[in-house]
Image 1 (spheres, rainbow, N blue to C red):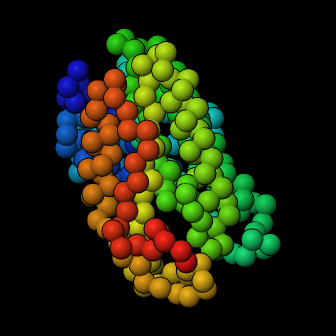
Image 2: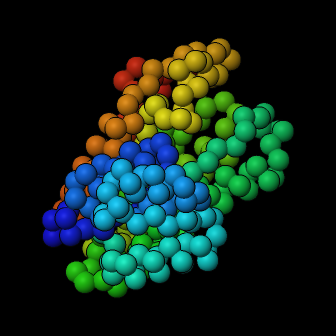
Length: 250
C-alpha cells in the first residue's frame, strides 16, 4: 500500500509540531485526520493540506467520549487508520515542586498520558480489526523523557511514562502487525518554544539562550518513521538542535 492510500491521524494538529507533521504527511500523499481542541486552527491546517485530503475533528484527548467520537469519524470517513502520531500535550505553569497544585498536575497527566493512552487504544483497536491488519503508532516523547528541566515535574513525569507506554504497545502490538515507536524532540522552534531563544532556566540556576532547530526537520523525521514497512520499526529516535545543552552535565 503506497502513501496515497494510507490514512494518518495527528493529534495536537492545529499548531506547532503537530501542524508541521500533518502538512508533511499530506504532502507525501497521506489522507490526514487533524485532531485538536480548537476547530478553527484545524480548518486552517486543512486548507493548507488540501481540503480533499484532510479531515478536521475537534477532540479533547483527555475525554474518552471525545476520543471515541474521533475514531468513529475516522471509521465512517476512511474505514481504516495506518498511522497515529500521538502528539497532543501541554505543560504546567513553571512552579517550584512544592507549589504545584493538584489541578496543575492532573491537567498535564490527563492530556499527556491519559490522552496518549486513549488515542493509542483507539488506533490499536482499529488497526487490529481492519484489513490488511496492522498500522503504526508514533508517540511524541520529548527530551524530557530522558532528563528534566527545572520545575517541570508534571511534564517530565508524563513523558517518562510515555516511554513505558511505547514499549508496552510495541510488545502487545506484535501479533497484530502494529508497530509502535517514539520520537524524542529537543528544541524545535514553535510558538510554544520560542521563549527558549530568549533564555530559559538551566540546571545550575542560570538563564541561558538555547539553540533551536526548524520544526520541519521534526516533521521529516516523523515522515520517515511513518513510511517504513511494518516489518521495520524505529523504536526510539532522538532529534534535537545539535548544540542544545542536553548531552553533558549541567
